[in-house]
Image (cartoon, rainbow, N blue to C red; front, side):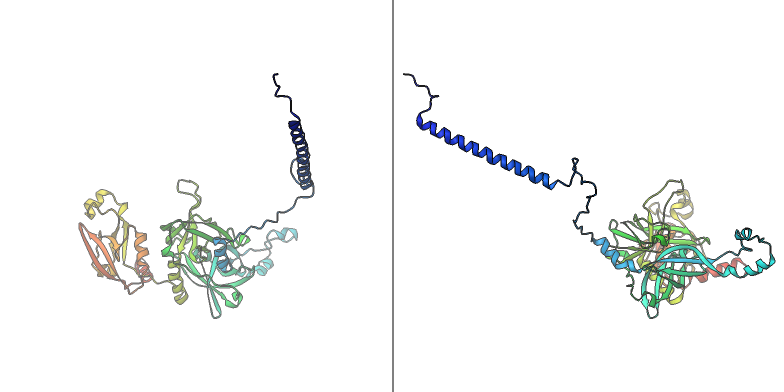
Length: 435
């Protein structure tokens, strides 16, 4: 007889029932789990609508806390209290009569009585402009603030707006047009709780490291604003003029930290919270009317310290003079270099002496017209601005070593800086006036 394997024996029939019961039980348990998960999900989302957003009136702030502390915030904390706004006060122009009010009260502006009443009101001071500054020293009854010369230019009075919003009267200690720096002093009792800023070493800066600018862009309305960027470059030669036509020469730090009108005089700070420069200017447009962003300049801290120490002591900066007029070698044509100067073709950078004044350090050292200075104390100088910058690191009475070409021969000479630049300038002015 042929056996049908599909027909179960009694033993196999019992196993089938057992497996069927287990399957049914598993289905029941699985359905329970699915229902439980669905219930939990719908309960957790009961405060949300169909789109997954909170129901009306039930939006909440996350309780997640973010640690916002960083190297920049710590640097700002160290110096921000010492950053101030500097207010330039000037005499108000005298106005006769009551101006626009005279018509309202039926009074004409021609009354002699009104003119007499208005006499002397031009002594009142009004806010002419604002800039920034930083408190860097507190000594005895005096605290000192450094800012830009152009911030205080033309002032008849000065005020300093402190970080707490209070205003104090300031007195001008001295200014230096050449580097665009000025020092003010205020009553130290007014800033007893403020830690003065400290200066870092600007000679150790590197392009690409963080830079933080603090100040009052657009005035005290935005006092103690902070912007951050990097050191874009070092040793930029920036030449500008004051409103009085005097030249300002800065061997500047270039930064892309935002610097706007009102930031002038405020500190540029490194990541350690040290002042590495005093913000001074920015380029907003080229001569060809191309708009520019992110090119600002600061006076290096090492130069700042040298100037403010002299301003504190003497109220002015004394600088040595060589007694020369000069032009950059690069400005001359190759024909002029070959036929007039006769310097080697390998000499492409330097400062040409256009003239040498009598009885000056340059003449006493034997320098002559058409000599080309290439080094001071072994350091290359390629422009007149670099020559001045190197020279002004010295004091009257110092001796410097100058390397120069006379035609095709290189020479080195020691020059005693025995002459004060301001005295030489005054002498030249007297000569021009026939005195």
